[in-house]
Image (spheres, rainbow, N blue to C red):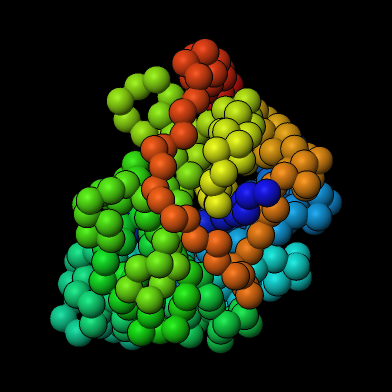
Length: 320
Ligand SMILES: [Zn+2]
């Protein structure tokens, strides 16, 4: 038995920072509902699918945009997730900090893309403000966090502890993880306790190249994910954290569904539903952490599966 976390980072972007007040309304519709001539493929579609298969999803919701555009759109997102019976947790994109109508921090000018650019005290303030926004928008008490772009550092964990948030899912061995200071001597691929917080790292794997990849719906084929899940189970891993986004079932122009990814998502849900005796899909609310005693090497995917994925990704690009 292994714990699997289907984590969804929920965010809205205005595609640039000019004229965002005029652009926000249509951006919100596009990113959250994902309307296409073939139907809506945004957040409600994902929530329905999870519900259909009886699976738990962890929705890391980015709330800082609401310091610019008001609480109502955030409350709409939180309401969708809550009514879908899923977890509302916290995601922070610090690109919004300098766009807030009321300053979130003193002396902020310009963009700082990642949380690790902020001091411990600033991170405490930002995470606290984010958790409060989720609460004001009708969300549950936040118990888990993911930094935008995985841009965390060791202070992030300290800041979470100061805000009484027990779980973090920001560590990614393929992006920022090694230099985050969270685990200077070894790559983290399994849950550990650090600075009074339980760190649940992203599932990562090597696919025959030197670089690691994390397990994300748009970046891995279903066959790869399936193989990695079995491998994680057979090697006695404790946890497997999968990522996707609210807009990830759409093509790049966000005007039609990406059928290949829509299919992957359906196959993944059906697989996890079918193999409940092996894979326990969980959330972070009330979770009793199962910590690893050692950090094994990252999972490996067979080269032929990588080859097929490259082919499949090529097809997706061709279909755009
Ligand atoms: Zn994000």
